[in-house]
View 1: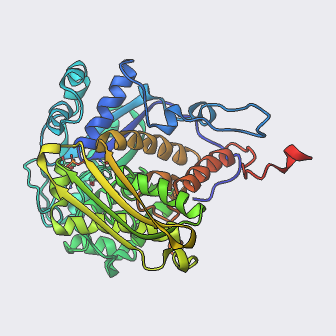
View 2: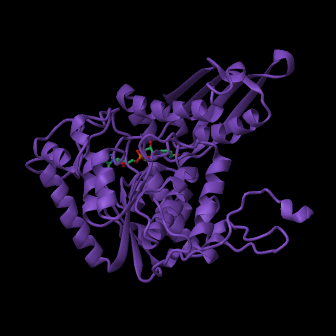
View 3: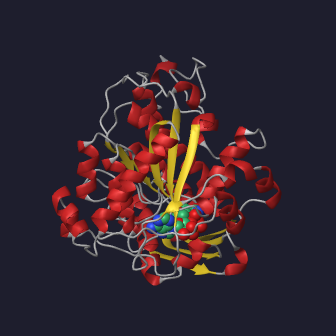
Length: 439
Ligand SMILES: NC(=O)c1ccc[n+]([C@@H]2O[C@H](COP(=O)([O-])OP(=O)(O)OC[C@H]3O[C@@H](n4cnc5c(N)ncnc54)[C@H](O)[C@@H]3O)[C@@H](O)[C@H]2O)c1
């Protein structure tokens, strides 16, 4: 991640290819959204790169440009989309099937969406038990499948005349995998690919193919994927940006907004019970206990890190944290998430907070995909290699350098992101000390 202050940033010239693994609810909502925004039908609500501003200098300087005017990001008109999926449906049919966006809007976007046909996926049902599809590659072993991806990426980039490409995993959550000895080095990883080793999941093959092809990679699901030493060292070696894991939307977004507030006022926590009903394909996949375990691990870690029970035992020791996801088809993508938060205040008196968030999962996730694509491309052009911790803002389970605990507090994450942009442009970092106003 290290980068020089006022780094030389290569201009964002030409087309930026956005390769999406998985053409489901999130990916199609993202693509359709960008097309709708390009046509002037909608605004990029929820996207920091498109709507966010950044304060520069002193509060009295009145310098508050839009982020997209401050750093040289790719423009929406220059984005080109490609995808892999185990189903052969075009982005138009997949979007209709996902049921997130209204048919009327999709009808107006039919032309660009119909053109996006998914390439054959690298898929193995061992890793996503609830799915099976026909649009799947075959190969002698995992190494050969990865080589097929590498060839396909090169061909796609050439055909679409892209000057740069980024890859984002927005495919289903795979089963829970623990780091394994074969993940340690690139040699052991490549050998394990040839041996068809169980510890090598399809998501790792896409990440490997991206990094071998000189493409930065972001992981939107909680799978281990690029968060293993072998692929982290490959990213470093090839000077490529990587980040993950698991887009921060819905209930975890709320947790990382509310928990820092409770902690800042030294309010204690007895317990936090979260439950969801969700009826989309993601919900169906997560109904499998092995895929849910991957998600659960990602969701559970958040409160521990924010509340620091070891530093504040009186307030946070042994709080109970339960997370449930229930697959309930009638709701489709329109998830409902309930939180019951048992807190305590002055003299230990108990209080409760109830949240009923009627959210739309993919509506919250789509702007994250856009921002990640644009920021990963920026990082790449600015020479920022390896884990991009400044993009933690977008993830439930932020990837960090080995041995470093992740920062989950959304306000610290945002400050880190904006200070990284200031640093890149040679501007003073904002500490909020503000003594100069009282001299
Ligand atoms: N929507 C959100 O708010 C949100 C938040 C955090 C994380 N996520 C994660 O993002 C991912 C996508 O979510 P979604 O709602 O779009 O799910 P979805 O089920 O609608 O789409 C996922 C797509 O990936 C495809 N797929 C599965 N394995 C594949 C493989 N190996 N190669 C290519 N395609 C493959 C599936 O066929 C499916 O079409 C999920 O892992 C989900 O857990 C979503």
